[in-house]
Length: 430
Ligand SMILES: *Cc1c(COP(=O)(O)O)cnc(C)c1O
Image: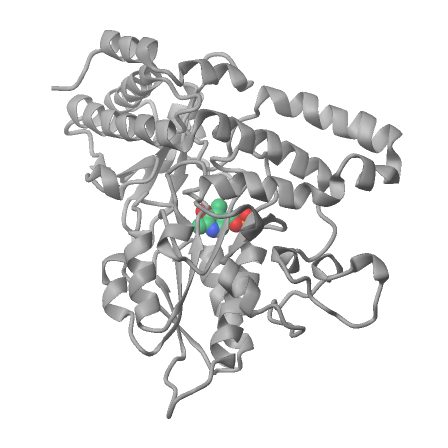
């Protein structure tokens, strides 16, 4: 039997992470279940960004590249993220967007495969991915396979079928660890092992994993990974993303070739020698392209610190309880109201979000947002019902929020409060 509101309040009282909520500038009365799309503002970020603007930029001017450590900031923030994803400090750098980092990672992986000594007739021509992968990942893969002038093809298959498609034709396995629509989580270690056994390289997109679920890239022997700074890492809208490259590959591709397809001066071995010839850095710095956004990196650093301070282990433990509680409560209180669970029932296969399908998902979510319960909506292909998406970021979501969100959902459904013209109007961002 599902718990009561009083029991949720008790869970909050006993929750060691509860004080962390004060680290965020959340508006009063809002239940924020969209940290999987845009993390909220950490209190420390406002102070830090003001300091970067007023003191470091305002007074320090260009000298701050040296005196305020701007030049090392991409690596410093990368080293913080490395701790959350089981990487070494020198395997991660913050730069660009997730889309651009995908381009760099996939492009490098394909070039590495291309440069391999071939035995006999080589069939390794496939970039394998999941059909339901995030569009950015699919578009980048389409673009890159086209750039290789028909040499490569993209195979996008159903999530459950991926492991059966890994074979000697697979060049790169490109997967998002936690699916953005369903929250379904792949077995990163197992799929990495299978891909590498077949001679393929792996590129993991950790957009919905970093800061939400424990990831151990080194233990899995993962090749490449990218991820997002503005979701569970609370880095702010459009925050810089990150890229991980396994140390063994950094050594192997340490030559003077253009292994990284977006060669730029910040990836040069000696940017301030202003040489005419590109000579890539012998480290993860090679995956930088141009001048980083210092204000955005400073904000991201504050966001990453909120996650590091809490620890990914305790965060995952609370997130598992909250997503389970949400499913239990919705099924107990909203039974027969047209909702269909679209996320895995098995906790271990679920990231930190829960999605429910409903024929009227869009106006229902708008009515919920009007009641200060903020989740989001994702459409479906093939005329299937759209999704109500709820993200649970245990740094600031309380157990009582889970309860109250379910009651608001129930009320919206029972009263059909969603069925008003104002809630049917589609917006540019869903
Ligand atoms: C959010 C997200 C992105 C975002 O890419 P941007 O370049 O930051 O727009 C990419 N991939 C996945 C899987 C995501 O969830």
